[in-house]
Amino acid sequence: MRRVGLVLHRVFEDHDTGRGHPESPLRVSKIRESLEASGLAARCTRIPPAPADDAALTRVHDVEHVRRIEAACASGDRLVDSMDTAIGAESARVARLAAGSLVATAREVAAGRLDAGLVIARPPGHHAERDLAMGFCLFNNVAVAAAALRAELGLHRILIVDWDVHHGNGTQHLFEEDADVFYFSCHQMPLYPGTGRADERGRGAGEGTTLNVPLRPGDGDGPFLAALSGPLTEASERFRPELVLVSAGFDAHRSDPLGGLSVSTGAFAEATRIVRRIAERHASGKIVSVLEGGYDLDALAASVAIHLETLLAV
Image 1 (cartoon, rainbow, N blue to C red):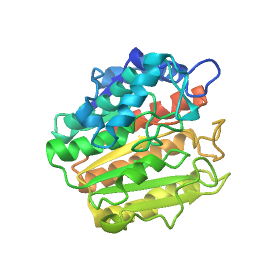
Image 2 (cartoon, helix red, strand yellow; image 1 turned 60 degrees about the vertical axis):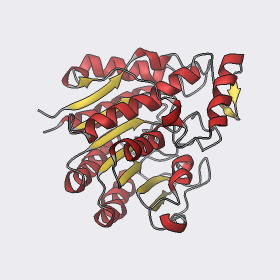
Image 3 (cartoon, rainbow, N blue to C red; image 1 turned 180 degrees about the vertical axis):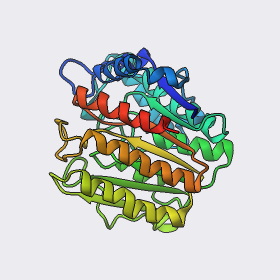
Image 4 (cartoon, helix red, strand yellow; image 1 turned 90 degrees about the vertical axis):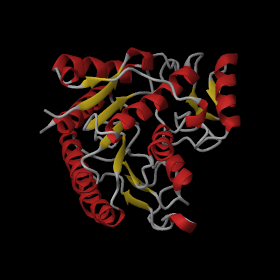
């Protein structure tokens, strides 16, 4: 039986984005109800939420950014930095828990106490820049985890796989000059935030450790899976990661209201198998996923379930 850690907790419903916002608490409650009703959650090792401390956050964010987010939430502001990034009184606290829970889960997998992990948390993270909240994201969860693994556990080569329909501009920019973190993204283009061209390959010492595969509006399972089985798999042969982090957005789904791709629920199972094979070949199977986008509640819950089921498969 595979040991898969799971963060799945009501606290992530405390981030209040207001009525009608697509990144709503219902995203987590729908997933939680689905995973518990199906029995998938019971097959996992439950990991309690844990906050990221200042040291973890400020490896990738300016301290002024952290303080500005906290001050905005404490003051009763309903937006921070951009018109789409809604906040409430508890948002800074919950965002710390999102980042810290991924760090805690990744530590357990890196140490070999778990085989894999899945963190169902919000707010999402991959759009957050060093000094800017945007695209529903306050802190960059996957970047905080990658930096913690390197600083605390001495990992040298970390692969971040981002299959959200939107390009993870924040994650790319935070590591684009870093040769030891490989960032891969397949995403719809044109689409928010407008970054992620194929010729964006990193800079300086990090040139060649950024790989973007833009997909065209309407693309479905074939192009989506080909990006993972082709360019990503080939790049991993050269990079040889020690651990794989997945920015697991499910808004490439054909039912999603914010994307324009046509990926099926079942394709997320095959995507998970492809990335698992990369982790098994190079990283002793160590793979940890964190929720990013996905805004059709039924499609989101079904896609997360099939992703977790594939992580659990022996």
